[in-house]
Length: 202
Image: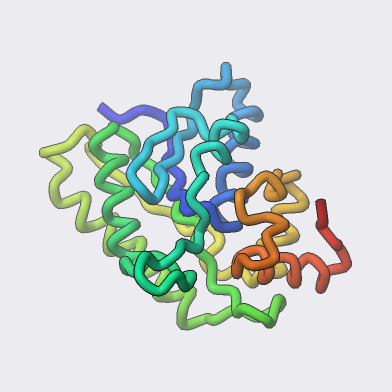
């Protein structure tokens, strides 16, 4: 039988940090005792029972969104398709009886904070729908009678996501990559915050 928690797909990037902040806000508005209804599934398979505790969340994100390639030493992103990561997370949610998955991917265009790639946004939504249906085929074999994958930021630009981060009071400065000038994630989002008139340093 499924519970009332939601599972946030977390990779350490800005979207997942914002999604956890939004989950925390929903938890507080429901008068939760701090043990739900949120959960975070980390990209490497670790499950947190409470995403409202940001100290624990960021401590668990010791691996940056960008990793060192073991051979060349060059930074690169995880080579797995996003659909595989989402499918793995959704199956994990089903196994834990969690019926609501939040996939905080967005379609912002790097270097152009106010632009959004409409085709990419549509692919994100289609992927979420297909994964929902695929996992639902085996609903009789796991703990969830039904499951739903949401993409709340699918059509967001970088600017919109940054503004939401500020509105929610998201502690993105706690991210392992913040203030690391060599990190692609930091360079991207520092530029976005500067573009909207918020130099979010320190």
